[in-house]
Length: 626
Image 1 (spheres, helix red, strand yellow):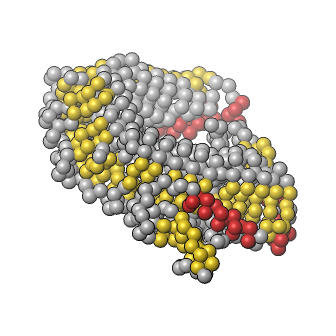
Image 2 (cartoon, helix red, strand yellow):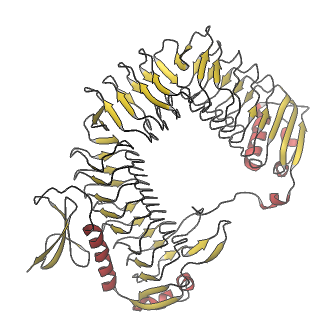
Image 3 (tube, rainbow, N blue to C red):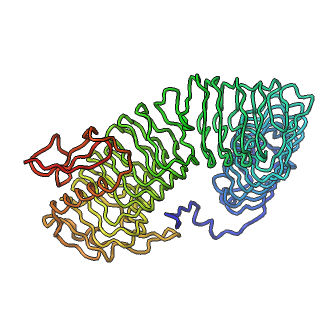
C-alpha cells in the first residue's frame, strides 16, 4: 500500500550539516547551556559528557536532544558525569537514532518514561546504585538486548520494560531487594522463558517460571515464550494488567475458580489461545483484555457471574446488553444478536474469519470503534434506525463487504469507517448524514458514489485510492471539501474518474490539493481530474470559472440537473437495499423502518405512486399506491 502522505519535520539548514562527535566537559554544575549552541545539536551523533552535572543541566540537555537531535544522536556516554543521581521523566524518550547509553555509576533513579519508545536502543548500563525504575521507563525498547537488575533495586514501575522484544537473556532474575513491581513491568518480553525471584525476597516469588506476589494472590507475568497450557496458582484472585499479554506460544490458561479481577490487556495478542473459561467469581475486568486473540474459538463464562455472560462461546456483559467479543475463529457463517443487545463493544468482531452475515437487533444503539474491523468474510450489513453512534474504523478492512445499508439517524460517517473495504460497491446512506470524515471510504470499489442530500463537509482522503470510481455526485448542500490541517486531499490516487456532478449553487470551499495526487516525497504530481469533466448547474457555471475547481478538471460544463442527481441517489439506495442484505428473514410481520419516493427522499407515510419501503428485516419492497 502506497503511503498516503509523508510528513518531514526538521530545520532546513540542518540538512547540510555533517555528523560529529561532541565532548562536553563541565567544571561547574548548572552551566551546560553555556557550553554549546542548540544549532550544534543537529550534528551530534556521539555525545560524551564529563564533570559535575545537576538536574537543571540534565533538563537543558534532554530538551535540546529531543527537540533538535532526536533523529541523529546515536551514542550518549555519561560514565564520567558526577553528582547527577537521576535520569528525569522522559529524559531520553523517543530518540529515534539512539543505540547506546552509558549512565553515571551514582544514578539511583531512572524516572518514568526516561527511555520511552527508544526503539533502536541496544544497550544501557544499569548502575549498581540503581534503586528505582519508573513507569514505562524502557517501554517499547524493541532493540534492547539485556535487562540487568542490581542488588540495590527496590521499585520497578508499571510497564517499565513492556514490549522489549529483542532480549538475549531468556531468564529475568528479580533480586531480594525489590519491594514493588508495577503491573506489566515484565510483560511481552518475547524471548523470556522464566522469572526467577531470589528466595530471600519478602514480596515476590516465582512458580514454574511465572511471577507472583509473595502470597500468590496476584499473577504479575507469564513468560512471553511460555509454551502450552499455563496453570495459574489456585490462590490467585487477580490477573494483573498485561500479565499474560504477548504469550504467542501459549495455547491455554487454567484460571482459578476464585478469580475476581482481570487487569487491562491481560490476554493481549495471545494469538494461539483457542478458548477461555471464566469463573462466576469475576467482579471486575479491565480494557483490551481480549484484543488480538486470533485463534479464539469460544469464551465461556460460568453461570452466576455478576459482570459477564456467554452464549454459545460469544462473550457479553451480564444482561447481554453489550456484546464484548465474538471469537475470531468461531466458524458459523451467520449470527443473530439477541434482541436485548444495545451495544457492540470495541473491536468485538475484530478479525472474524468466517461470519458472512450478521443480523443486528432493532434496538441497537452503539456500534463501537473497530467493532467489525478485519471481519474478512462479512459480505453485507444493515444498520438499523435505532443506532445513534457509529465508531471510527467500525468496518475497516472488511475485504468481502459488498453492500451496506445504514438506516441509522447519525450525522457523521466517522474516520476510516469503511477504509480498505476493497469489495464495497453499494451503499445506502441516510438523509441525516452531514459529514463524511477522513479516509471514510478510501480503498473501496465504488464505480459511482452519490453524496446524500445534507452532507456539508467531506474530510481529507475520504475518497482516495478508489481506483474503480468513474462518477461522483456532489449534493446541493456541500460547503467544505477536504479542508484539513495537513493535506486537503480527497480523491488522491482515485485515477479513473470520468465525471463529477456538482449540484451546489455556490462553489464549495475546497483544499488546494483536493483533486490532486501527491507523491511519496510530499510533492504534488498532477490533478487526477485532468481527464474528467466537471458538470455543474447551468446557473452556477460562471461561478466555477477561474477557480481551482475549473483548473483541476479537463472540462467544465453547465449541464448538471437536480433530477439527474435525485435519480442517481435513489438508484444507489435501491441497489444497496435490494442486493441481498444477508439477514435472516422474519416473515411477513416485519415492521416498516423507512419509506422513500422514487427520488430517494424519505416520506412520513406512503404517498400516491411508487413507494420504496425498507423493512425491519433488511428487505426492500416496492408498493404502488393509486
